[in-house]
Image (cartoon, rainbow, N blue to C red; front, side):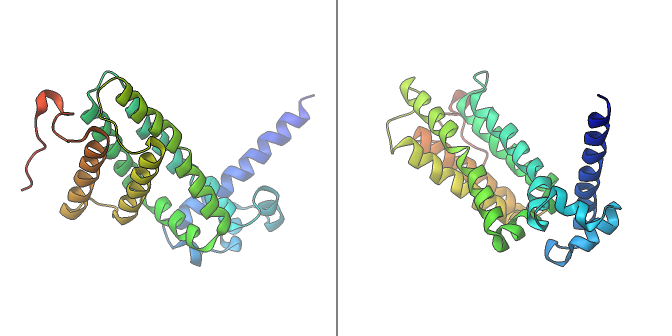
Amino acid sequence: MEAPRITASRGDQRRDALLRALDELLHESDLESITIADITARAGVTRSGFYFYFANKAACMAALGADVYVASVAAAAHLSDDSLPPARRIERMVHDLTASVRRHHYLYRAMLEARRHSGAIREMWDGYLDSFVAPTAQYIDRERAAGHAPAGPHSRTLAALLLGLSDRVLESLGPAETPDDRRRVDALATIWLRSIYGTSEMARPGGAPPAAEA
């Protein structure tokens, strides 16, 4: 009865070795330049072993890139934090999203590259983005029903547009924060606030306006 469990454990180790190898290689080169032979050689796994776990390099990249999605889910959870005023929820969500992109910047850039070349990765990425539409729309509906936000465009349409804009802003960020990046991120948070609440000031604690730009 123990043998299947041992086999599964070894299989997990081989899969993890392949993902670890791709992760290491992405620190040294871009995704397009990395071959399956590079990955298997670094992992110490045969080519047939690679194909046992992944259909192709894009599938391996998708599995490795799951960390980016997990970080996005954690950032989006701030919208449900009723202990925070609305402005802080959105600001923390945007801050954590941008921080996760910088923390996983090499992975994020590799995912963007894979999305350009792989229909499967594009479909997966779009699925990730779509998975946030319903929760964001529910947040908007809840704020409107509670009288915290005015009536406005259809909540799902507004949510999809805000998420699409966020995706474009995240794509533009570099691994280290620059003044231009900071302005983009601040503008993104303000657009979220004004789109949902009609203003960025009344949603802030005490009606305090955002800090002026230097």
